[in-house]
Amino acid sequence: MVARTAGRVPAPFGPGWRRDRTPTTASRLKLELRFSVRGRARFLSHLECVDVLLSAARRAGYEVALSNGMRPKPVISLAMARAVGVEAYDEIATIDIVGSPDPATLATRLTEALPRGIAVHDAAPSAGTPRLVGCCYQVVVDAPPDQVEAAAAAYHAAAGIVVERRSPKGRRELDAKRYAPLVEVVDGAITAEVALTDEGSLRPEELVRALEKASETELAVRTISRLTLRVAPPVGAPTTASGEPL
Image 1 (cartoon, rainbow, N blue to C red):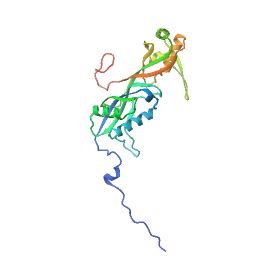
Image 2: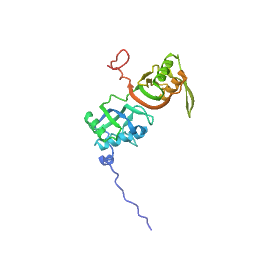
Image 3: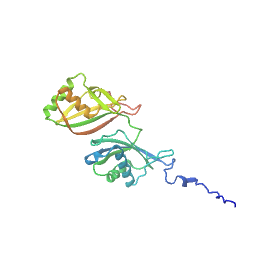
Image 4: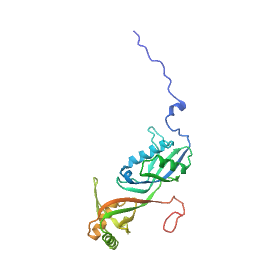
């Protein structure tokens, strides 16, 4: 008895092989989005926020470009992770859109497709991945305004304030004033710009612990908001004497 062998089956080729993927030759536009996350949307995690932006782009009728390789993924990234529960007024995302859409129209249509609490304020062609050098936080604490101002004065008077960070990797000591040399009190709330360096940065709750340590008072955190992100200017771009882009 002779076993029958299967005949040749033609392998797919040509455009049909990639019909469900974005062709590598398709034109794409890299955009930088500025958006806010407020209200109940602040409880979205970092990855959930990415998924929400991708879903809004699809509902608005835009196609997000895919990366190359065996496992292509949507080309989108957030400049800085946001802790769950923290409101943000000036988040940055870069995203590659297939085609050449109008940035202003895209920002409007995305906001209409996004859930309540997330809004795109600006969209512009991206010059590359933004390099963050600082961010401004506002922290509201349960304490009288005069007590908060006294804590800020004690913080400024101290030469250095060391706080301890505990993590699964171990313990680390940080000088709070190295990353946040200045602290302001506006309407009873603490506002400070925290530097982002290659060696690390200071978390807003660690800043509050430094204020407590300097003033020997208790400042219970009520809310934390991230007001702005400061981006380094592109290489070769003109800047002011303070390093700000012109």
